[in-house]
Image (tube, rainbow, N blue to C red; front, top):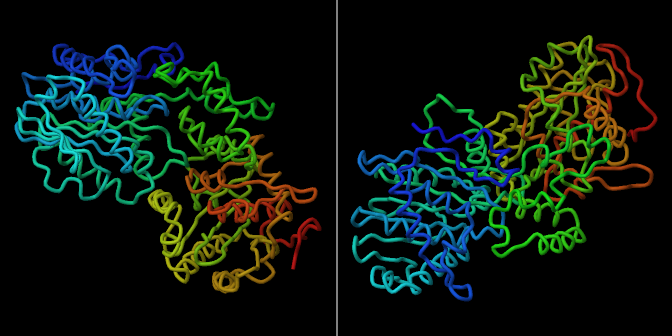
Length: 571
């Protein structure tokens, strides 16, 4: 099996070199595929230039790899999957349409099927129109291919095979015979759909029925926190690129990922504390992740566009950076977000669980936050470590099934959290019972203070109080904390402890998400985080963490009386 890793990718991308690793390609196949590609003409550009003259080198690398990984003698494909992460403006859809035509020209199997799948009808239509336009520009191709516009299909009159263009759907493989090639555009758009992983399994299963079957995915970064199939596929191909699977048997996959090295994409803790701007904001670095630069998009045009987006606010900036520079949202690019989110990933303790937190701590506090049925229910346990006095936290969340109906845009994310073991989808009664079970474990440890051990907002929390009492929490242990400015000391304090590396948290994507969702609003002399500011992006488990933080900041002792603070609003 070929080694498709590229561990020196960060050096290559800085130097503007190809990200295609050194592979023993079958040169005759690679050259033939590239020759077909180069002769195709752009139908919507003045002069109809050849792709050999107009296309970026990055895609020509991909073409050579796709066709050069087929061994014509052994009838074996050495690479089954290709994954290209490239920013907006890289002509992905047009080049992909051309790649589909080349696949049809290289195909030797009669009555086979090739699929181009777009996430939307508009993208699928665009690809079909580009493919038909390229055919119209070539008398030879017009004799070989017959477009059927009403069903978005192009028939190969020589092999009787078909190239079908469609939107991504669970029924796409219905009626497909021998599947030889699938081109999937903009996977990030499909990441939030619950059935995407299932369809990808179907696609790969269909391709595996032919020795030459190949899947090519081209996409930009997600314009939201990566979720679902996009998140899992991206994690896998990054690991392939970095050599994490060397020596292991995996699906043969080649990644071409145009993203910044970490020191450019993310600042270190020291740099953040010094107020240094992220290096990805420097236009001089932009061409690094823009393999199609000057074809036709230019850095100067992007600079003007960037300036305009900055005037529109934080959300516009995030979307622009994700789409044009492949900056992953969730890495602290918010201007008005909680600054602690910028340092969050640096303070992960991968071995931390509820059980290990209790074993390592001399005292613990609890925070609980929940609202209506379409809110999340959050639990946070904060411990103070023996000897070091470092703070440790572990969190958990629940959602009633109604959340999946009313908040479909976060359904795939919640499913990811369920899979990682930090979240459950339960009806509200069962969720309260499960929370009580976890709280009972903490109570049994004997590490809770006799007073001010459990922080909770009393609004709409009657059922939660009953659950806590049933878990062995006494009324004296409960501290009723109103949200808003009263939690400001925790907002500041946790940020500082993240910065000075005296706080560690469990490795939970749930908390990375809610931390990234938090927006900070000035209210009087204090900063506050509220659900209203965060909007549909849920933050309930973060509020629970802030409540536990407030109680831990009072320097409690296990089983001893602890006096409250005048800075909190208490009822």
